[in-house]
Image (cartoon, rainbow over all chains, first blue to last red; front, top):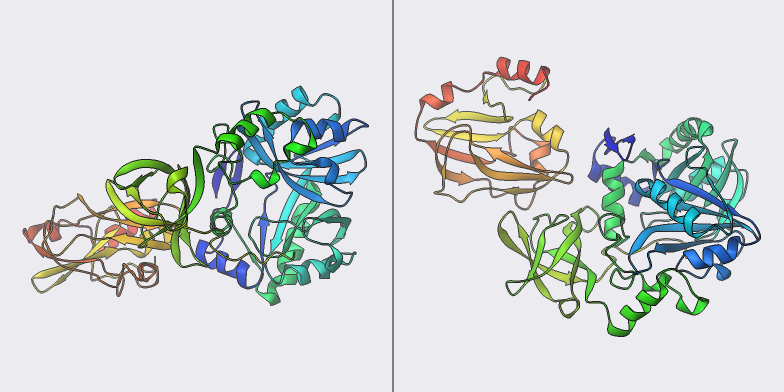
Amino acid sequence: MVPFGGWEMPVQYTGIIEEHRAVRAGAGCFDVSHMGELEIDGPQALATLQRLTTNDVSALEIGQVQYSLLCYPDGGIVDDLTLYRLAADRFMMTVNASNIDKDWRWVTEHGSGAQWRNVSDATALIAVQGPKAEALVGRLADTDVTRIAYYHFAEGRVSGARAIISRTGYTGEDGFELYVPASDAPALWSALLERGRGDGVVPVGLGARDTLRLEMRYALYGNDIDATTNPLGAGLGWIVKPAKGDFIGRDAIERVRTTGPARKLVGLEMADRSVARHGYRVLHDGRETGVVTSGSYGPSVDRSIALAYVASADAPVGTPLGVEIRGQVKPARVVKTPFHPSRVKK
Amino acid sequence: MANVPGDLKYTREHEWAKREGDRVRVGITHFAQEQLGDVVFVELPKVGAKVTAHQAFGVVESVKAVSDLFAPISGEIVEANAELPQKPETVNKDPYGKGWMILVKPSNAAELDQLLTARQYEEFVAQGGH
């Protein structure tokens, strides 16, 4: 167990590589209750969210989820989030644990047109991810989960607990994220592991959570995106919709769109098993071109992989680069991402 | 405590050393590989390199952390385990056998006697291993 943003969390239960492989082969359960949940409602909820986030909230239907960003006026990123539409005027925003307080101050200051409630402490979140996730959650749910489409959700009961059953995740596998009242979480956790044992379902810690998301090129706030990075450089232009109307950061982002981002977040593959880690310098022909933001061994691809910001000119796939590791420059090259194919149920 | 072979010598940095004739074989202990987690990369010195007791001779890297490897004794590298670059997980699976790291020609035979015995190492680990 390690301290993580005010929580005690397991890095691993049995082993990072073993847990990672178990998720892709069967299913794994992640206790991610440390994440934050904010509820928004009122007649101005939609308009307020449109001004605060980069994605188009008017395209979000009831029962649907969208990935989005909160940005600063200069285009830097406050946080990445998922936004749920529960009713015409009622939404839920799931945010990173490390940013709950910051996000709360930001949205209440800049989104005063709606009513906000921070329900993070009352809400637990358990993710069930892997090819066997649907069968497991289906066994415990009172609703037909096979009918829940990707990035959609249903409200129902799982193992008796009232739940938002969301077909979302951070692994690239099919699966669900289950939002339940905090007091129901321990029983739900036990029920999932108990009913899943026959399918080889295992509990999964932070270590494998990181290797799984890295293989999919999913951003991690604090590593790959932060207040100094803009969405276009990070490869998140697909969730920025300037045509929807004005939002905080829109002008700054559009200026970057015109000139092109100075640096881009790319996937790197190391030539050997050396591990590139956050903060390591990236070089092109001996000249510094960028920095590693995330890196690890990827068990499903059996290679050392990383994400790094590099000068846009050095970003094309195939560009040979070097990563400085403990004083030595180790060879790497830019590769396509995701590093591992996605198997979400599109 | 299991997994502290009686015929080896140990260091407080969790390396083991085994006399093999006039050579000494070196690796990391079961406790060390357990603490590290899945080993994904091992950096070893080249044959002919000199090592000095208590100084770093290489690096062992797991998914979550990088750790220096410290030489138990001084001498010259006569062999480095060529299997580890391709199969670093061998360190986890067989730390005292196939997971060996370097074979050293010692420059000072007395240094081996100054290392911890199995019993002393067991006690050290039982008290936390720091």
